[in-house]
Amino acid sequence: MLTFLGWALLAFAVFLFVVCIVGFINPEWLTDKKTGKVPSRPMLALCAWLGPVIPAAAGGTILILQRVP
Image 1: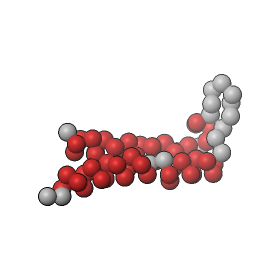
Image 2: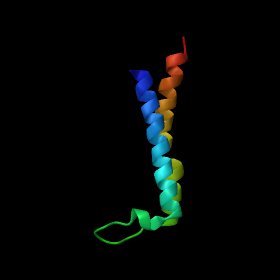
Image 3: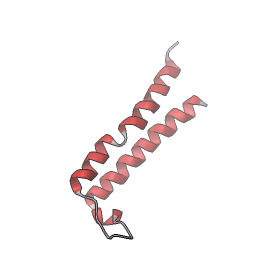
Image 4: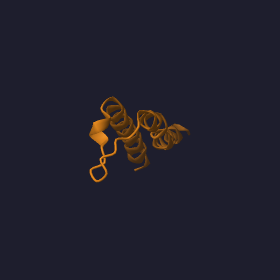
């Protein structure tokens, strides 16, 4: 069960990274429907690099601790 959770967290981190990079390339894709505001490129770059850190660290830690005897 914990192995599945570890891989799920890593997959979520990759998904989050891909969404932010795609948004960085084409910011209009993430436009707010109500206000019409487009997120700034520096904020998207920051989110792409910092957003996946916590789920990736948690998933990696779980997977590593599964292997430690």
